Image (cartoon, rainbow, N blue to C red):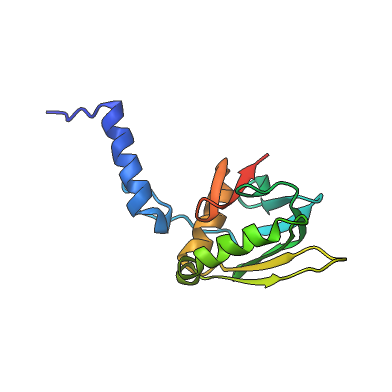
Amino acid sequence: MKNIISESEKNRILNLHKKHFILNEQSPFSSTPFEIPSDTTGTKIGSDSIRVQSNEMGVNNKYKVKIKGISGLKILSFSLNPDKIKMKIEIPYGKGVFVKNILKGQKDELKNAGVTYNYIGGGITSKDKVDFTINATRSKGKVIITRVLKGNKDIEVIGSNVRLVKV
């Protein structure tokens, strides 16, 4: 006798899976975890976008970095290698205090996820900057890279406040 599962039940199971099994980025019905290809690279393009590529997977995805409530971010540098993701962003004048508060409010969450940052306060003649380093060997880094390679449209980097949005 076949068990028939409705679409809503499938969606409920998949949502539970996303909440509890996101670490390995694999379906509970799959026997092998997703492996990040060794040729995966990331580069900054333009002033506010990044590109992640993998020839092995045939992936060439472009993303914008978004911080909740702040527009006009400028990416100064971005790099991705097997061990870490590094990104330096410049914050528009007058918005640095908001970014600083977001980061302070999630300090423990960031530490547990392997995300470190260095907030560089600007002055009268320079804008505030933030250097992010995400340990790609820890679960958070693997999840971000995996989602980018799979082409997810909206990816949480730091809670709901810092996101990558596919363009």
